[in-house]
Length: 126
Image (cartoon, rainbow, N blue to C red; front, side, top):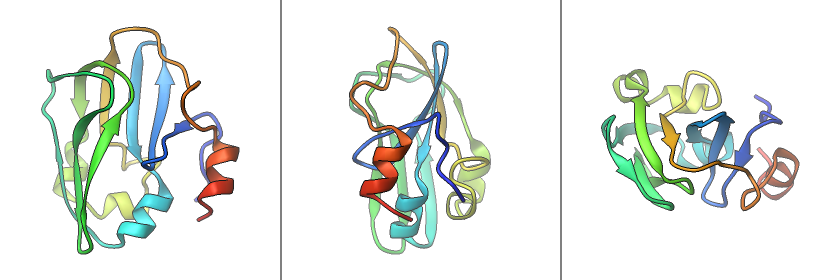
């Protein structure tokens, strides 16, 4: 699966799709490959207010548990329950059906402090 070119990426392997004042967040294919078999996903509930660099939830695999962190402050407006019901979606389709949460951001968002697809792929090839 190719990395979407219009997303931005964090050093901790989250991806962010910015559409107006809504951010969709997930984990990258690189993260899914490193975690191997993802067994459990727990996200904060819709309505939760987050500050910058706070945990949206966690992803657990046979290897480790990893926090999913957002660099954007805002309110969680939607959680992908399908991923909680079937965590393996993150291994098979992390950029599509494997999105984790949608956050309505408090202020305008941009990718200035994050990596673009080309930079991310050069540092973390799949």
